[in-house]
Length: 67
Image: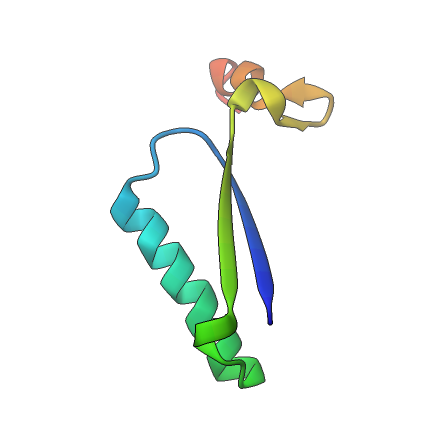
């Protein structure tokens, strides 16, 4: 049973976009590895930009600086 965890920043991904991510990840495992879509689990975690950092800075700070 494949388990896929997708982490994105919490910035308003729509239910439709999330549905497409889940379908796309599932289809990729079916196409590439021949996995059963009925047993493929996909979880989307949305992380607040204050809790996600790159290069020692939060995403919130980087976005304010235009990075």
